[in-house]
Image (cartoon, rainbow, N blue to C red; front, side, top):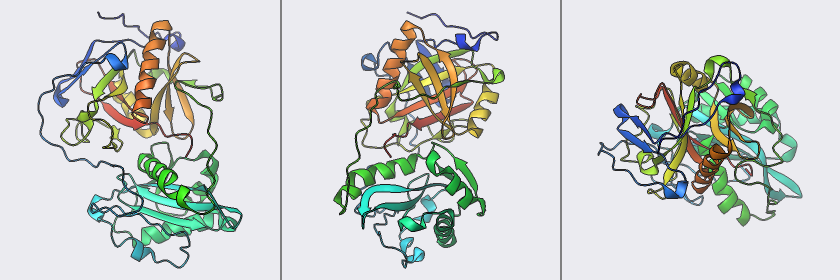
Length: 378
């Protein structure tokens, strides 16, 4: 049964409503997306066969070894005299991108009674990985800049953009990168970095002397009482007229699937963990608007990090940059249940979800983003 589609009004953007469409088709991409009342009740589709598309997939790399594909794991914690050139010898440079990701933060390890600080540098494919430890009395923008310059100087692929996601380190990292010829972007689109940090939190730090297990954080699906941020309204020219919760098979995003960097408009695809079950469904939101190109271009420039359904506040929210939130829709009781299914589906795939912007349900996307919600405990 087709549910009623709600229209947004120019007078009151708070009245935006999410709609459920039984079918969203994107013909030139050979996608068929069916909706379901619950994540667990979704039915598999028969999709036309497509040619195999090569895409970078991050697949549970062991922290203890360097894979033949060329990703480099650097396991040194006293590296002041280490040669960057030696560290990068094993990198397969033809797989490295010019979108780099950076983190500088303390780790759950005490060294001489003080927190271990590390600088991690990777690229969007995860095939470049450099780790440098810092003495706690040298955590400053000068040291960060020196490490980044050393890595760039020895790299065959130079970064055009360096993203970083920690608001607490914004000033230091921003100052450090301001004197380097790169575009510094505060962004939660640091997907390769997040996966690397999860690996280190799971496999590396617990094995180190001085490890201190992090305290469990309060949280839950669909927002918590600890999140006191307030989402602001989207600009009038960028509001969608209709929204739909949809699902696509995970298989469409891995090798052999039909979704790739060539058919997603101005969007972007995050790496997919190949250990996730290929028969599962990735939850997403389709934004239908006559201003699809304008909205997609705006999203491409604002570092869209994810879509979150805040069940407690009854809001559908778009997250961009480091901590910006934009209100997309208010949720009534029925839509709140759909949103809960959306959040549960995200949680079952470690935060993986997508957003598509298109003019109507039969049109190609002006922009398609495969996203992953960055965990709060990194």
